[in-house]
Length: 158
Image 1 (cartoon, rainbow, N blue to C red):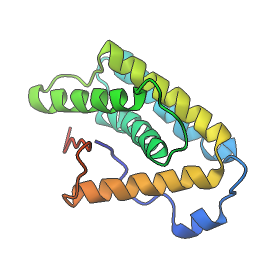
Image 2 (image 1 turned 180 degrees about the vertical axis):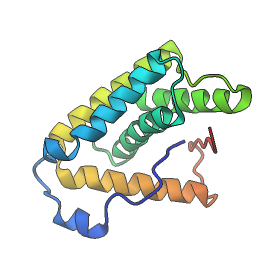
Image 3 (image 1 turned 180 degrees about the horizontal axis):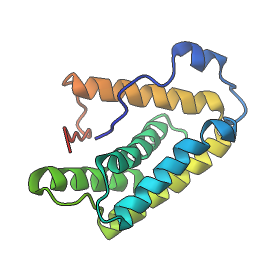
Image 4 (image 1 turned 60 degrees about the vertical axis):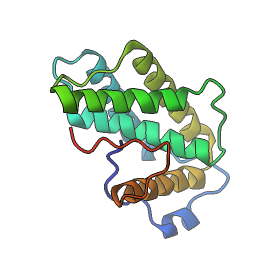
């Protein structure tokens, strides 16, 4: 269900990344702004775009990677809720041509995931964030090759 198409970081980026300090805000502020703007568009814009859905999916999938890596606890199971919400919105749009929208609980789940992603960026070491990007990109490439895990959701096109 994610749009990450290209490799954002190389193995060298992982090795060179700070393993104790968080990524400098100037390196992620634009990404976060786009993600928050995308969620706002899905909530209120007359015609949210596929790009809005893709940006929110990126955040959700990156947090799913951090969860699998054991870098935070999701005691309320918000990440799976956000994954389902994004998948449902994508499938609904594919099947009916409806405008891309999230349910109320879906909006709440994606909002919490975005807030958690902000916290992760501010608190986790830069290397961990870059590793999460790489793991997410690898997982998406595997899904596209047909190697899916039981919990993987794929929305082919919007």
